[in-house]
Every structure is written in C-alpha cells, then in structure tokens.
Length: 332
Image (cartoon, rainbow, N blue to C red; front, top):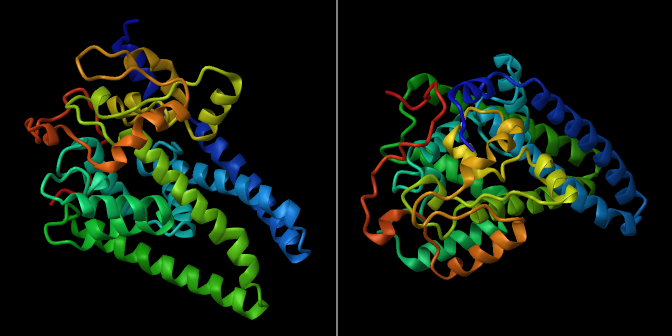
C-alpha cells in the first residue's frame, strides 16, 4: 500500500476525540479511586486487589496521554493541552517541559548515543553491569526512574535543555510538583489516611510505572539497527480484545509509525500500518501481540543495549525517515 502525502497531511490535522478519550479515562480513574478508597477503608481486600490492577492500567494510559501532551497532540487548544499535561505530570511526578525535551532527543536521535530517553543503553562506553543495574531499577522502580531520568538530563553538564525560558519553566514545574505533593501528604496526615493513599495511589502508581518501563523496553530494548523499523518493535493486534487494549494505550503500539510521523495524533496511527512492512535487512515485521514482542525482547536483558553503534556502525547517522515534532524547547 502506498501512503500519499495528502493522506499524511490530513492525518496531521488536530484530532478532537483524543482529548475526549483522556477525559473519559480521567472520569473512570477518579470514580475507581473513590471505590478503591472505600474498599480499603472497609477492608474489602477481595475487591481491593482487582481494583488496584485496573487503576494501574488506567494510570499507565494517563502516562500515554501525558506523552501525547508532550507532542502537543492531546488537545488542539494549546492552553488545554499544556494544562492537562501539567496536571497529569504533577500527579505522576513528571515534569512536562523536561519530558518534552528528553523525548525530543528520542525522536531526533533515535537509538543514537544522544538519545536521552534510552540512556545508558545507547552509550557504548557504559559497562554492562551499569546497564543491567539501570534496567533493574527502571523495571522495578519505574515511577521514580523515569522522572529521575528527565531530571538527570536537565541538571547534567551539557544539558540539551539550554533555552532560558524552558529552564525557568522546568524549575516552575518542579516547584508546582513539590507544593502539590506537600498538600496531598499534609491532607493525608491530617486525616490519618496514609494507608488509603498508599493503596489507592502509590501501589497502583508503582505498577503503572513498571508497566510503562516494560512497554518502553518491549518497543526498543535489544534493537540494534539504523532505521526506524530496525530500532523499534511495533504491535498490530489481531483480535477485538487486542485492539481494545491498543486503543486504551493511545495506539502507542504502532511505534514505528509514531517514529516516522511524531505529530500524527495517535488515534490515527492505525491508518498507516502499511508503513510497518520491512523493506531493509534487519527490520522487523509487526508482532501480533505484546506477549510475542516481549518474549523477543527479554533475552536482550542479559546485555541491555540499543542502537546501531553497538555493531560499530555510524552512531550519529540521522534517521531520515523520522519526522520530529516542531517547536524545539532545547535550542539555545
């Protein structure tokens, strides 16, 4: 199937339903949090366990809505796109501006050594024990690892976040996060509700953070090619349940398409499944489900690495087929 430029241009237009999907998830999230809090208070543990798992999945979905906001494709109104991104980011310990800068390097320098999102797995000079430790931490403490990864990029010498306005905004967002969470913890202390906060937020949030890390690894870990399809894994679900699961994750599983056209709202990514057909050596066809992609990935954790530089190829070669999102926040 040939993808025409007009079809691609049409797909880039703002997509209102995306924000309504997020809003629906937000309503469901707060409703389930209320039920979960009641179940914890009444000690209905038979109900708590399944609710925690459902809430964790919805939290993971919110992290992907945050990703959409980072691309400025969640809502066509820029004010509301940023407001929702700040709201989700503050609740999930994520700084929107820092994430946007880190994620931009992931698109501009996919799987190269200056891909900040895949550090340290793209750095050929990093020892294997350090990469194994980083993988262990990310897969078990994802709720903290991902924010710290963005913070590392912000504070390290030579940070790609050089724009003064962007740096001021990062500091402001960090202050907002500290103030908000001080209020949350203060209210929990006043009400004596730390147990409820732990079970309704931190436990499902921890699971969601690990789900995010595991999905990220399934998308990239062990891929050592120099093209989009040889440095990403995509999943094209075959059944109704699989497609529903994909929809609940904002179609991020069409990952190769996302890296080709980063500004296309993710609700439209399934239109371009034909772009996932391999055309060069080393490229992989889409997987029918996350299970098969995970099994392909898991063996690479013995020596976690990503990028063609591990095969002594030209590490800085640009991904010519990758269309990055505009309005860089990292320019000097």
